[in-house]
Structures are given as structure tokens and as C-alpha cells.
Image (tube, rainbow, N blue to C red; front, side, top):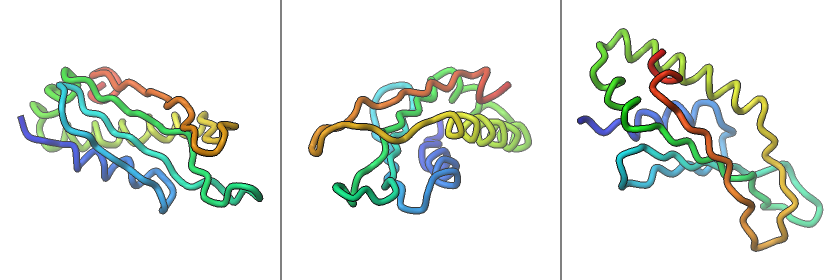
Length: 117
């Protein structure tokens, strides 16, 4: 199956602030996208980053996506973008973790129903 990690990374990048850090670690059957960004200046922590988002697109969703035609994949991309926009609008990126301690990541699973309808 074709590797769509850079494609989905780009779709995520379009929805996040410009200074976002986005990683797509390899390995495993599911695709994982990790993202965080710099929060507005905090008087005590100018470089404070958001809580980490872990987007996990399951293997079945990726296989169904890969089997679709170009038009079907384009519709899936639009569906994924709308889903991500909704997730982000309900997400609070702030946290009270002490300096040097990473807050627990938030995991957003993406099933074939979410991605492919």
C-alpha cells in the first residue's frame, strides 16, 4: 500500500498554527500524526507549547482510502479536514504542567467511518 503519511501530515498542517511541530513516526499498522504548537506568550514560559495531539488513523481506514478513486479520496480529504476542524474547535490546548513535564497527549482515533464515510 502507498505511504500516505506525508499527504495526511499536509492536511493536518493546513489546520494548525504556522509554528506547529508535526511528526509522523513510522512503524505499526496504524498511521500516527503528532502535533503541538507554541501557545500565546505566558509571562513565565514564553516558549510554552500546547498539549500534544495524537491523531491515529487506523489501518482499515487507510486501506479503504487507498482503494478509492481520486474523486473518492478527495471527498475523504474534505471529510477529514472538516472532522479535524471540529476536533480543534472543541480542543483546549492549554495545560498547567510544570516546566519540563509534558502533559498527557490527547488521542483522536480516525476510523474508516470518519475518513471514508
